[in-house]
Length: 105
Image (cartoon, rainbow, N blue to C red; front, side, top):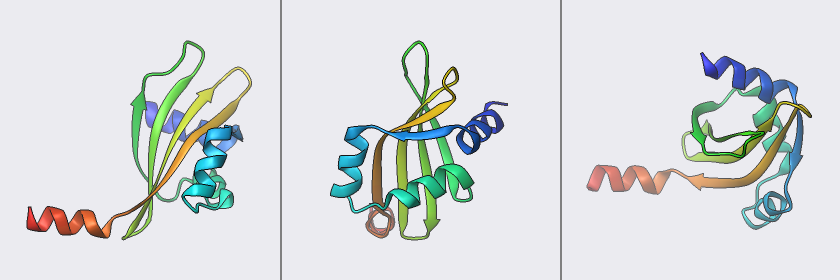
């Protein structure tokens, strides 16, 4: 199964941020420590979605939901040779409006 392999690599590989990710963290008011905690502990990981990546990396969209009303979505690239996880972007999404739309739609 692929999910335990991904979780093991997320928890044990070194973590890097692209400049784009750092810019998005500031713009979206996400603390870098939260991202690091999420990616290393994986306590609130709810969904892993595989994306198309380069020839030497695997790319995933990861959904973390630590509370009912907030989700954090990270796009990461995993490289096995240097054993690192590269955070490409980070999104903080408020979930309360989505539930209202689902109930009224």
